[in-house]
Length: 309
Ligand code: CP
Image (tube, rainbow, N blue to C red):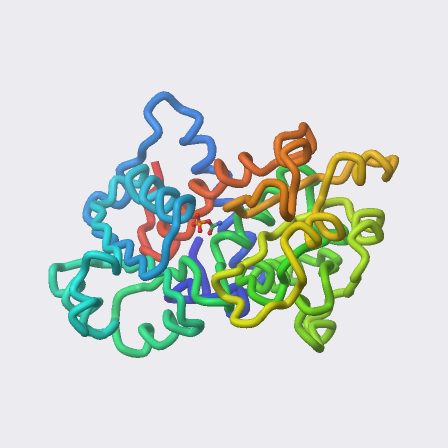
């Protein structure tokens, strides 16, 4: 089993068969993660660098755990506290890390397109751990994998992505991934947070969150990315919560159970209330758990190794 790509830069470049291969491989690794010894020796001779130019909790820990569960050697780099503050460029930073015999790079960067730029300048495989407002491919893979685990085949499933679509790399990667797997996708939220012409990506658009929930089998709720908004796009967080936040009474009025997802970090009381995030219809922590198996699968498949124990 192998992928059609050398790097995982975005879901846009993947074939449907690549996604299915990643899921099948993740199924195997998920079994490994249930064992008492949650580790396989397949990447004993591989070193992976996690290079994060932007903050992260889940993605960074999940990649590091995935690498360690595969027995890879791991080095972690954060831009804060590094020589980036002395003017070192992205390419110089990465080439210096690669000179220390690193085989694979996992990178998060605030600039959209940074992993594609890097891929033109280095030989090592790159995994995009989130670039600006563009893509977050492993998040979309773990989201789709978690929906498949709960609901089976994604073909024809109705998935609503709710919130700040405009500034979300999770939204774009999910749209590509779910579309390739045959799901129906709707984006919902305030008009100012939904990009013009997004219908061209094959999604439905809804500005009334209650109607989106009535349509959906699964709702993936996204936070407001205030750090990427350079002008006010809605009045106040309180008003956003009032009109677009997902709360329990909204779900109880539906007369059906919608599966609730969120990529994290959650802003409780803004885009989602605790009585929804912590409810039995929420699979938020299953997403986090599945992230390790998905990232093990991606790293293993890109490494080109043939043996899996
Ligand atoms: N979902 C996600 O990317 O979370 P982090 O920013 O904590 O990695």
